Length: 432
Image (tube, rainbow, N blue to C red; front, side, top):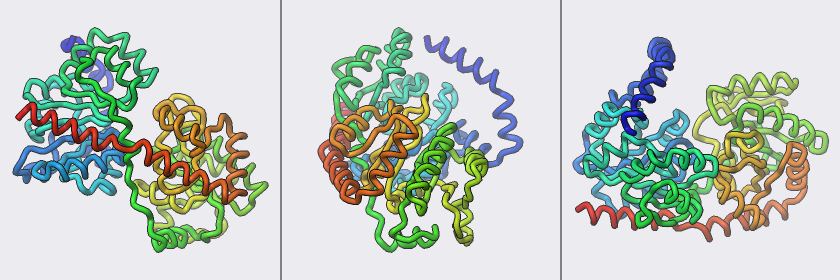
């Protein structure tokens, strides 16, 4: 089965070959990422390690932010082991370099080809591999097992959609999952699903969701005031922040914003598309509605906002801090199908009321807990987004009660990091 997997991988690569060739020729930044994902130019800091590192993989922004507390706990318990943090996306890598500074090295995750994986392992020499959530890479896990390097899936989850795909190919994934040392799943449902796919039941446990252990330092009043000054805003200004939006969603948010402005003319919108390559597309959507807009990067460069009601957040790595100046936060990826939403806990930790749409499959359990405890709101349409945002803007007491409820939810559900660190300690003892 591994032969078939690698054959299909090679065929897909051959079909897509023109794309990496164009990247190598014309895009310097993407060229660097490509070579690093081929394990050809990993950072020199890897050669400075005196002990074998823990390798933690976090796909993108949400997983990177969730990894911070885990890195701190592992370094506290195992100070002799450095930590290498890998990401798949450019935004995740940029976020890691900004927020995960306790990691000793930050790299891009290698492509899952046998020869690339072998090169990466030779370069990193990990003592342990941990994948946050459920990233299943057959060649990597097989190579780790062959080198007697334990691999753990932590804060693992299997969505209903993914489960159907995995289950249909369980004859293959049973073998792949047999190379993993431990599975620390978010919920009992996730544990049951991965066991059904083929994970050995005695290696599966429920540890909770690492994202509830998310620690975001409070933004000091001086920094909030500096942000407001840069944006040309006052502390009394009502601000709607739409974070991590996707194609088709900006239009809905902007239409809703125009409706809100009829009731609250002074309302500001801070719009943050999820992917940097879509910043220009979002700007065009704003312009098509005859809305004046200024970019965050222009403000960085010394420009001043005049009467623009929309600020396009075309920067990377500062959205979590910017949440601190918002009045109401909308979580993107939740009004359009196929994305699955983004992490609502980040603005909730900032003490802000959070709204998200009907499509939150990536955070289904978190969304359920928050809404059940009246710590966030789930809406089903742009019209409902208008109504709920206006209700929140008009009621400081409601906003405060939501913030308190969210803090209670986060505190009650935290603890996954400790359980994962305990599991790491147990696995290391078995391999010593």
